[in-house]
Length: 455
Image (tube, rainbow, N blue to C red; front, side, top):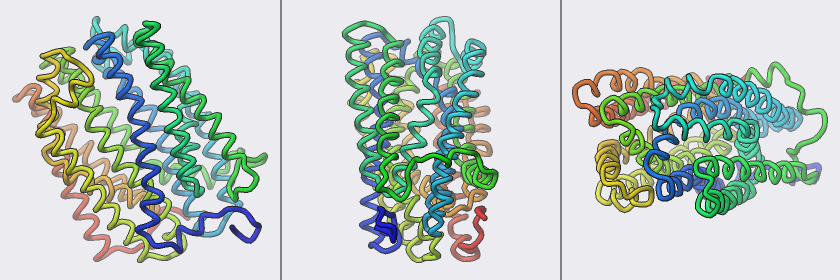
């Protein structure tokens, strides 16, 4: 409790760092796993009940969803970082206004993005690699998702707010509840009522709507230091500028991810056809699950690092970084073992098609070669973002996507076909790991904790 008798996140600056990271990361990990379950469940139900082409159609929508997620990440991650730092500075009034601005920006940006994407949906899907066989699936799914785009943005933004405001367990409950409802609706809409890919989309939108309703109710609690109330939703130039300054890093990551998926889909379509795109959808689902665990760890790290940075307790910032790197490395090592030695067990969840299974197995084994070190790279990039050093975070994300991965995707497939597509991802990971390690070493030997982009 703070001096006003309301719950406060002061524990971030006082309790043992290892215990805090577990307390904040475990709910975040569960939430991220649950979030990835949306896609996994959709693809599994579609692959088993509709067919391999439905999975391919769903994979075509990845770039649009990544692009939408880019704007959501800019507001959500940027806003949550600014919020945590303001809480560390004990500036509670500004912190509440940050929350209101996060809500307003999500509504505005979500509506504009959805409107533009709906108007140009067919040309966009064709550019992203849709064929005559898959565009119908992709269009049907994406239009429904876009109708609920504001809900999607609010859902992710409010979950971040709840987590940073000192309620990681409630954030976890929100995500888990949404996934549970999504699974039930997927079963009813796809398996029982045979709505096909439209059923998967409606299940996602409706479950997220219920999630936003729960989050709104939770954030209106008058006993909390940070809550939703009148007068905090008007956009403030300084707050918006800080949100965008920090959020530009995850925005660039997601934007580049959009460009990368476009190149992957087009390369696979050229060298392997629609089934190769479907295989990538399966591989992406499995590898993404482990990446989401690491992202959950970094989400647990973010409020701890941000708060203690704001409070100038830099030794605690370093401690949470070390713990995060250790846990993330263990997770990605497990990913390596499972995907390199037992790929068929996971692929069978999605499809029994022999050719799709062969393509997915090949892709998974190549992509996972450096996975034990990938967790380190993800943590370092998010660490710089968490303490307000957006420029360093942006450089790490852009070096992997723009400098390394995109050129590889333009070159290697010409000589090695689909194998070249998979290998491009591994080569980019290796080079990015080297860059991240070099930047972290330079920061601790020649840098300063005081060079934040937040003023």
